Length: 510
Image 1 (tube, rainbow, N blue to C red):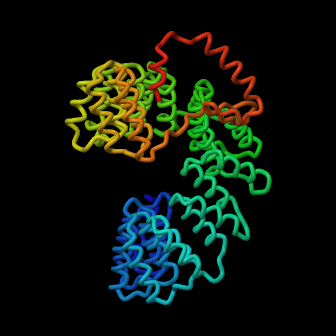
Image 2: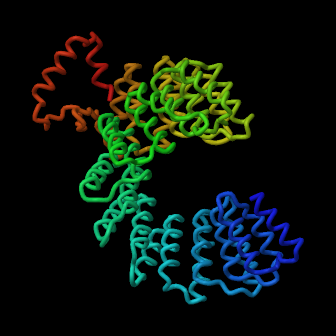
């Protein structure tokens, strides 16, 4: 950019700065180059007596991908006041700016200008409108625009598919996917990511297996979603298989993929493999995301000292912590019972110009409650600037139950049921409080209230990975062909560890 400014200075001193071709090149480079300066581009534009539509479009496009996309709209208004006529390349960037701002009303206004200008049948513009409406959560209008496109191309189909996926409608996304005349890597990646975001991790992996057989080669976006699915399922062997897939297909092991690998290995219990990937990343190329993944992974495994040491190492090399970093550190303190350190990290959030989120408050409550400081945790919640979330109250309830503060536990449990009357886990929590107190009538009444409201307890299950295949086990489920041998071994184990606890106690634990 400094070289461009020197060239511009020479043009100014030689009286050639108003020459259209030279000015347009300066505007285009400074607006769109990765090393450019969009504000500089705008200043050059305003000095031209008669900027071309190309010049206006370059600046509008530059602002649409900047930190301040609202400026695209401001430049567009100035363009209209200047008497310039927008063309078919102007509007897609205005739609993009509206999408990034999540302002549907602004996008609707842009759509109105498109109709007035007679560009509503332009496919490039229609595709950008689909993206805008879907991003603003108006998937119905996005579908209306999609259906009105006479000759849909791959971008049209992918925009609609991605729109449904982002809005959480994976059923409609799958329908669009199956209807597509051709599918590219964007199509497959959007569907896989949609299933991951909807929590259907197994289906995401099944779609990826189908992609491996009949689809294109996966890219970085695909593999990040697949790694995320493996992480949530705890499917270590499948995660390792995905890593081999990347190696065999010569996918560049970018920082984003390395971060996904660290996260996957850590969540699947392979903390040494996570550390191996992490230490293989150059410190100069690392960012806060991969440090967060590793710090959080160590914390989850109870390796509190190593987690805090890694944070200090992160600070030494100049990586600036973010909100997620402090969330990971508070989690580490909860696992290690480090109340003093937790308070220090919590206070650091405000000192470094960040505002604590509900997740930070919930973690702080968890730290105090685990250490038995339930009264302090309760007072901390009362001093909060906003109402407590279920996760905060849930952490307090667990602490009260574990440390025998059953009176407070009952109040918190009742409050949780008021907030989430259809959440089976809230009834389970309060029922366990009554069971510990041997208040069997109250436990029975709670079960009856649960039944009257139509709340059913979701059966707990375990996922066990055997030879790369995930097996789901539910209590009392005998559908597995090997169930007789499984229950036989389970009985052997239970006989080894069975305590002499009151059978009546066990009856009232849900």
